[in-house]
Amino acid sequence: MNKTILTDCDGVLLDWVTQFHDWMTSKGYVQEVSDVYDISTMYGIKKEQGRALVREFNESAWMGFLPAFRDARSGVAKLVEAGYQFVVITSLSLDEKARLLRISNLKNIFGKDVFTDVICLDTGADKDDELVKYQDSELYWIEDKTENAECGLKYGLKPIIITHEHNKDCVDSNITRCDNWVEIANTILGDENE
Image (tube, rainbow, N blue to C red; front, top):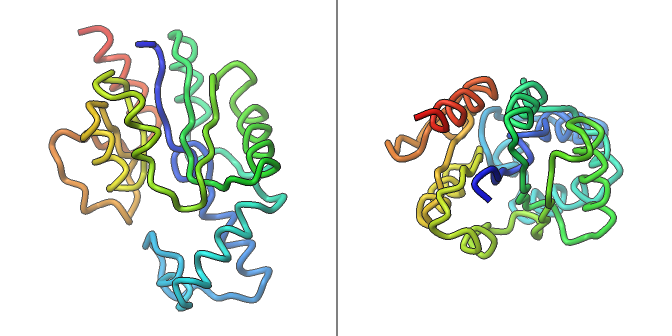
């Protein structure tokens, strides 16, 4: 278990945002604000409409073809080489076909033996109910959303937040900030050697 890393998926392993923007553009939407987490603010639409569009996108065929996020492939490969495996906890959708597309996408990019589990929660769902299962395990928890990183801290995990404009407000000294996967891998492997 100590060679397990818990991780979010979108904005951490896979580049969800770029593909979502391409999809929204194909539907005629124009991005009004960048570098925010809230889709309704980003596109100047109502919250309910934003949530519905995210769900529609998350349940579309696009979920099988998201590219790797930044240098995730090389960072994950370095950790796998050191004996680590990953459990993905993602607020994608409860749709089983979307989950299968997500698993296929992850395997195609990172390899078939990297992920021991891919847990798909409902679109936009909180992660408390899953993270509490790992309470006080001190496993690493990699996230891009501030409140989810803080949730991991609450349950005795070791959160790492990967830098985005939307999480610059996360300044908790108990949450490690990394700009990329090279830094994440070096942090985890460095701790292992202490």
